[in-house]
Figure 1 (cartoon, rainbow over the protein chains, first blue to last red):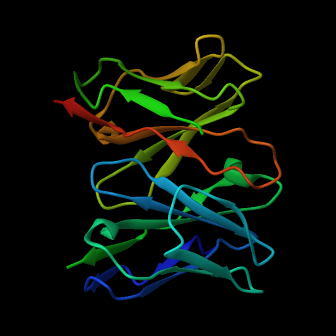
Figure 2 (cartoon, rainbow over the protein chains, first blue to last red):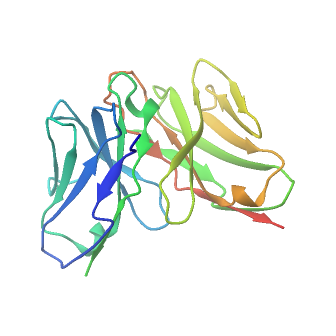
Length: 114
Length: 115
């Protein structure tokens, strides 16, 4: 049974560029949440997607956007990258009925902005 | 919104001793409190959780206690082993079962088990 898979594992971008990160949820899960984890900090909630719609959003600017596809996979897009966007981006999947109760995290994408 | 404070930021204990990590939360609507363990370079993994309708939950060497009145919850690890060395995060959310309940995490505790 495949867990949550994220791609790419590492990425280096230049300030001002745009980036797309991808997540495939665990088999049987239909809800995808994205978190940003800065070095030495706890993960911060970005947003959650269910039925291809954003259901809840954390305190992140509009430069952060997402999408969920009919197969439940999801993308996180960040525009106009800033140095402060350098972080580990974690995807977590769950079933709607369980919300964060059934979270399974992926291993993350390490984004470095230079 | 919810705010979760976690202490200490670093905890060093002798192998075999107990470790306690404490968290406080601000939103009285929060009712679900998971704990995650994250080893270096790896994904966060759920180790134990508690809902607000119980005061304590135990799973082998790990236990969590919750005081709703004081808005704090704690992780207790007994008989610590070298493999317990990791960063531990507490989190809170007003879990409704409806899916729209992002977790608010603490800043983490780096637990070091001394041989």
